[in-house]
Image: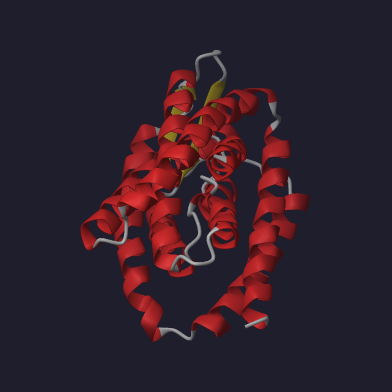
Length: 273
């Protein structure tokens, strides 16, 4: 019973933070699962993590939907682009020297996190955007207005790369997607975190179905997912509510710290092999 309670508590913490920054929480959950269940193979634990990320992202998306902060048009397009990238990433693993890639990518993540922490992003509003940019205007449930514009092709390319890298490294795509949407596509931070969660729900659902069909997701996996899922569903609702009270700058700094932790973890785990 102690293990089950621990899973609920872990799920709650991951759901809260993952939804707050729009990252899903998989980058935190996977290392925890590896420590808690060292006897199980990584593929099984990955399937559990992905299923939990789906529940987290679905619950968070529901909360963000009520707040009217999701850019559905962009989210659907980016999701369609990210899924093929994720498939390509899974097939490319065996052709790439994983250790060298992990070391380089870990250093890049740390560098990006430092950049995000100290940079103040300025969004390009639709009025000053070039004519070929996609323009968005969103009014949330509290009548806050968001006007922004971005280059559609750049967003699609970024989504393909996010899907590819997240699948290759086994980390949640949201931790890369949110900074890219804010700093390269000019999304307002709160819209980026909400839309990223919506994209992640679609990606995680597709990935979970794949694990179910290939047999890596078992009844034992479902049992662990149940307890973690109870926690993340509740935590995601809290995370979405907290996001309303957090300034955009705080969310980006929290995401930058999380990104740095992931980068250091990938780097050190590879060196210590």
